[in-house]
Length: 84
Image (cartoon, rainbow, N blue to C red; front, side, top):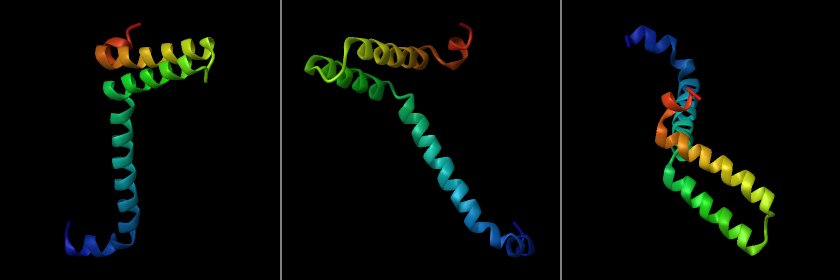
């Protein structure tokens, strides 16, 4: 970036910084959302909630299916899971 361009775009620097931070947060969220270890931990917590009576069997089955679908999508990959 040249000196003139740098000076002219200087007022946009805070916006570029906010965009960069937002992109990093989004990347971290995506990694956590699709991390098999996190999904397995959520399944374990869900099972404990069912055993302790905190949730009903219907709630358990609904959430378990959602988590297993996400886990399957991570293992199969996005290209193959779109073919269904």
